[in-house]
Length: 228
Image (cartoon, rainbow, N blue to C red; front, side):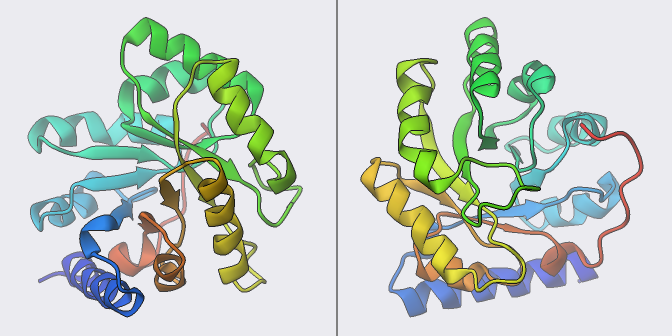
């Protein structure tokens, strides 16, 4: 067992424990293995150990490594968990099965246009900026209800989930709880919440998708290339 598969086994065990503590069925929590900046040779052992859902931050990076992996290993589900530029919507809709970072009208318009053209509709999550951090993408909590309604009414998009990234210097629980509350009042079932350090807290507060990278893959190598 190498470092990656050992980390995967540990994370799976911790997810099962967190679900048991929360009185939840582990089948209701999807592990998104965050493979951003890791090369295909680091990802393949995790695929071979049965992991099928992966998260990437950048469209261009994902395009460079995932098509060959997906061809070799059918059944992969690829999630875009980083910010998406509107001009990358065509590539994102073509490559990803889910987009976790819907957060503005121009992006909604671009995604809707590409879904209509491609006839392929990824699962869409609205990103909530629960900490109102100016440097971070996402819809402010007080604007979330109106934005979610506009996604459907104005752009014809189906929003299936919400995503949040709590501020690093704050306890994550209140941010997870706020995101869950917004989802509940809008009839949204999926919650992308929790990363390597706090996914147990997220599961306790209703997360359906946890985004775990370093706990599986180890120290992340620096990204080399243009932002996309």
